Length: 129
Image 1 (cartoon, rainbow, N blue to C red):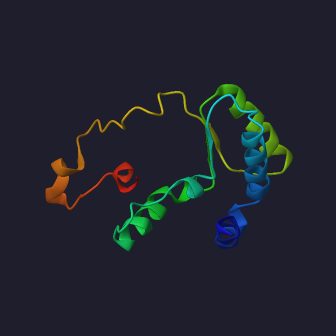
Image 2: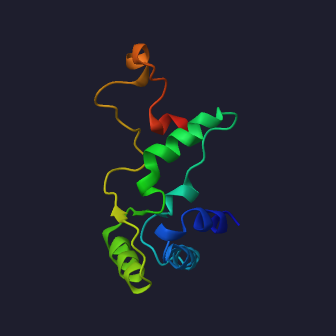
């Protein structure tokens, strides 16, 4: 159901995303991937419970171009997923993330509280569980 809502809202940008999503689910169930595969990213993200509605809008606004993308943690998985996406005409980005995906997110310019005087209350990663 959620995938249908996303496809309806982003019809022009979602060509092939449903097919890729279904393929990823099938490959995941059959344990064909060598590592985790995420996506489309809009289905992987959930703003913290009881968060103000503006948080979700902020995330959507900041991540708009990436909401239909997929992320792999293994190069071979990225290649297989990219190849399948091309066959169904999906233009979503398939990214290979090679860092430790369990490591905490680094904020090289400082934590959000250091910018409170400018109205910054959170970094995007802090809006999720």
